[in-house]
Image (tube, rainbow, N blue to C red):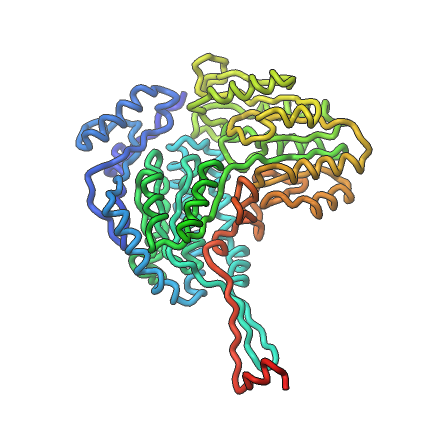
Length: 541
C-alpha cells in the first residue's frame, strides 16, 4: 500500500478554499463543504466521515491538517444564487456583442491552460475517486472538444455568408443569453468544462458545483476559466460558479425570468420531469441523461478487438453513462466472443485511484447490483464470471467496496427483453451478452437494427463487422443515439464528432448529438440588400 498523498499544508500551501464566484468576485462566506480524499473510503472510512462532519461544524478545527483533507468550497446562500443570475443577465448582452472571433479564442486558450494545469486537474479527479487512467481519459475528452480542428469546425458553423441576386445572405447562430449548468456527481469537472462552449457561443453562464463533490468544478472554472475570461476582456458576471443543493438551485433557475437555457446532466426519470418544468416555464432544456448503449458483434468481427471495446463496460465500475451496457452477439461466435471477453477482464482490477493500472472505482451502494443480477438469473441468464464484492486488493469479501466485473450470457432476445439489466441502464459493472437466435443473414441484420432502434435510451451504439453490407445497413438504418461507432472504441473521442448527446430517454424530446456551443445558441438568417425594389422582390415584375 502506497503512502497517502501529502496535503496542501504539507506542501507548504494553505488549505485549498473556494468561495462563491459571482460577478467577477469571490464572495465571503462561513459555511463550507469539505472534500476528503477518496483514499479514506479504502483505508479508513470512519475517519473520513468524522473529519468531514467535524470540519463542517467547526471550520477552525485542527482536523483541517489531516492528510485526508483536500480542500473546501463555500455553500452559496439564497442571496448569492440570486446575485449570480443577475450578474449573468447583466453581462450577457455585453459579452454577446463581442465579435465571434474574439470569443472563439477561449477554446484555444482553455486547451492550453488545461495542458498547463494537467497534473493539478488529474490530482483533483483522483482525490475525488476517479482512477488515474480514467481521469486521463476525461482530460482527453476536453482536449479533443477544444482541439484546433474542432474550434475551427465550430467557427465555420457559427457564421457563414454568401452572395445571391444582389444580396448578402447570412446564416449565423446567436447566443441564447443566460445558460445555467448542472453537472453530475460522477464527473462534475469535465461536464462543467462544457460551459466554455456556451461562453464561446456568447452566453453568460451560471454553474452549480454539486454540493457533495464541488472541489474539482470550482478548480476548473475559478482557477482556469475565470482568468481566461479576464484575458479576453469579458465583463464581470460572464461566468458565475456557486455550490449548493441541486433541487433548490434548479427550482430558482426554472422560476427566474433571467434564465434562458438550463443544461441538465443526470438520471433519465428526474431529467424528463425537469424537461417538462422547463418547457412550462419557457426555458430551453438541454438534457444529458442516462445511457443504455448497445454493442453489436457480427460473425466476421475481429473478436479480440471487439472484446477490448466490450470491456470498456467495466471502466469506472460501469458508473459512466457512455460505456456499453449490452452486447448483441451473432449466434455463430457467441462462445468465442465470451472467451475473449473473459480474457480481457483479467486486466480490469480494483486498487487505489492513483495506481495507473486501476480501472475499477468503489461502488458505495451495491444492493441494486445484486437485485439486478438476481432478476437476470431468475429469468434464465447464465453467470459467466463475477457477481461478488471484493476488497481493494481484489480478494472476495462480503464487505468490499468494489464489485467484480460481471458477465451474463442471455440466450435469445425474447429472454433478453425480460431482463432489466438488458433493457435499462444499470450503472454497475454488469454486462449481459445476448446470443441472438439463429436466422438467415438478412433477417439477423434486421433483428439487430430493430433492437438497437427500439432502445428507449439513445446515447452511443457500436458495431463490429468487416462486411461492407452490414456496416452500410447499420450506418444508414440506425436512427437511435447521438453517436454510432464502427470497429472502434465505444468511449473514445474524435474531432468533429460529438462527445455527448443522444435521443429518447438520453436526450429528451429535443435529443440529438449534442454540440453545446450550438445547443446554447439559435440559428438566424439575414439578408442584406442594396437598391432592390421590395415590390419586384415579392412579385418579380
